[in-house]
Image (cartoon, rainbow, N blue to C red):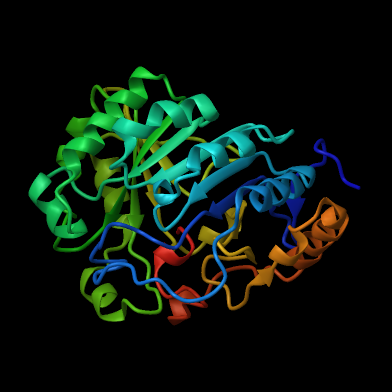
Length: 331
C-alpha cells in the first residue's frame, strides 16, 4: 500500500499530479451564455457521489501523493451536504489545500461554515464587473451577493481568493482597465479564461473566442510582469504589478505549450476518472468506492490509467472529447 508521504503521481511525459479537481454535481442554477444558455436539465442515471464515496476517493488520491483538492460542479453549493464534504476532505491525512469553485451566490450565508469545515481557497466566477453585463451573461442579477461574499472571504482571511472571468470577444473583453482598477487595492487574483470549444457551443465559440495572448500583450504594455508558477498551482500564468495589491492570471488552453505543465486530474460527479478535460474516455472508479476493502484496487486502477494520459488535448483540431459543456465536469 502507498502511504500519504508518496511523491505525486506521474505520467510517461514526466508530469506530476499533486492536484485533483472533483466535481460534486452536474447541476447549476445559472444559465451562462457560454455554458448552459438554456439552463441545466437533469439526466437519468446514478446519483452523484455520496460523502462516504468521496472520502474513500480522496483517501486514495492522497495516498498517491495528491495534496490539493478542488471541489467543482456544476455549482457545488447546490449540494446540501457541502459543508460535510469539505470537512471530510480536509480531514484526510496528506490533504493540505481544499478549494472550491462557485458562482458565489450563497457565499454570504454559507462561507463561514465552509471556512470552519476546512476550506482554504475560494474561486468565484464573475465574468463582468458591470452588473448589467453580469445579469445578461448569467441570467441572474446576483452580483451584489457575490461582492458581499468576497468581502466576507477577506474578513475571514481565507488564504487564497480568486475571481474567474471567461474572456468573450465583443461581450466583456473591453473591461481590462476596470479590472486593473479593481485590483489596485484588493489582494485577490482575477483569472481570465480563454473560451473553450465544447460539444455544444461551436457557433458561440466561433463568434466570441478571443486569444488570451492578446490580453497578455495588454498587461505587458501596462507594466505588468509574469510571476513564477508554484508546483501545485492551477493552469494560469500569473502577472503582477508593483502598483496593485491584486494579480491577474491568464488561462490559455490554446497556447502551444499549455499541456506541458498539466498537474491535475479530474473525477466526475458520478465517479469517473478523466485524465484530461477534453479526453475521449472516462475510467469508472465508483465500483471501488463502496468498501474500504477495495482501497488497494482503487490505487492500482488510478496508477495504471496514468500510463494512458496523452501529451495534450485535441482542441486545436476541434476535438472536444466527452465533454458536452463545462458544467458537466467543472472546467
